[in-house]
Image (cartoon, rainbow, N blue to C red):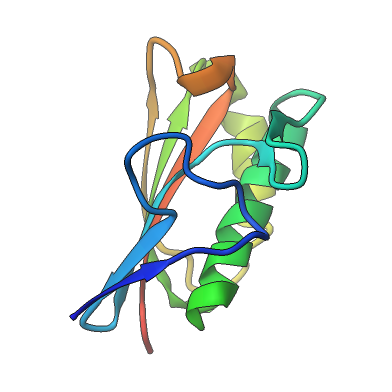
Length: 126
């Protein structure tokens, strides 16, 4: 059975999608951008600050669904510029010090709201 996950501790969807959907013990988190959930505005700063907010948003959704970063099995990182990869990777890696998930990272032409990073995540109950 499909369960829709929603929390006020992460940005509300800005389109026709859910923050996350859980099916059969697998959680699919929609791509998160660096919006502050309290203001729904892009956080100030560069790639490190934006990645930190994205990871906070992912953490809030994981928590709301009863998961943790340890349950994450796959991430897809979308960057506005591959020159930001190293700085994004430092912040991202701080959440996965042991047994990091599988991951893909791509540079794309542009991201919603002109942000520098978007990350989607899949987690499975251990």
